[in-house]
Length: 346
Ligand SMILES: Nc1ncnc2c1ncn2[C@@H]1O[C@H](COP(=O)(O)OP(=O)(O)OP(=O)(O)O)[C@@H](O)[C@H]1O
Ligand SMILES: [Mg+2]
Image 1 (cartoon, protein in one colour):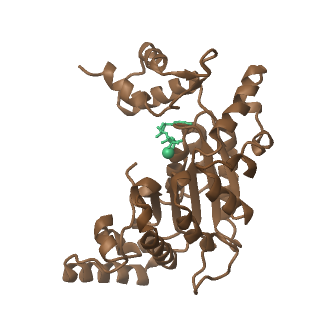
Image 2 (tube, helix red, strand yellow; image 1 turned 45 degrees about the horizontal axis):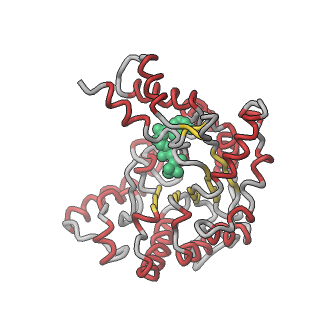
């Protein structure tokens, strides 16, 4: 999905104040210069209905921390039906998210760190989580996606980004305690920015009068992917089922020592050292059969009959590793969709 980000304002009227990053860089968190009268009227309308009939209002529009159909079963069903080949991630996420949402007084925000090979479903799962908490999913006013290379590209601007990010998180959590923040390409995030978010992740009741304990932070990265893949390959070579892999088997793969490389060393160790990450979620590399599943889903969503012949041909166009055994897809499910275009060209 498109990264939605840095939108201004707060509360139900927030969509009115949606702006581009550029504008916000000039006036962080300021009220946007959209026709003030129209904005005022609309806001007044929204606020009256919101304040006088909050329950009623939330039946028709999205509200902070509520979704009519939020249930463990719905999340489980979504994960079972949509996410392929990730039994570990499924289990951890279901329990973590649901336990957290049902905890009336969490001691700290929920922090999930999703790791794994490219194209294995990390962004995809973040979207499923967001959709199960907010009707609008990633487009919800309460869900914020940051992509390191897109939103924080210049190392020379770190101080500016840092201030803005803190203001942004603070402003949004004050407006809605149940805010969701997703940080993509965590391994490319500048150390200074990680320092900037650390205080929000910790065990504090209040930080400058704001409680972050109901917020959800999701970090995505490829850190540890090779190790995760090694474990999966070991199982495969020993003729064991992928589903037999236990979280315990991945523990070493995701331990601090593994992250002592230049790319991902810092953020990881600095967050782990202080126990700020609640769950490390490993994503396994995808196999040929999972690619086929992804292709079928895509065919269906484009309204085509499933043609097994095309499914096989597209899957066989992908490249696999290790070279001799050809077990795992190099790109996960990431490029299968564009390959499909070729067969439906005319
Ligand atoms: N395990 C999976 N089950 C079902 N679909 C998947 C899975 N993994 C990937 N896909 C499909 O492939 C697309 C790309 O995957 P996604 O963007 O989630 O990869 P990623 O893990 O974030 O990769 P990267 O590390 O490169 O960012 C998804 O939108 C989804 O359609
Ligand atoms: Mg991704």
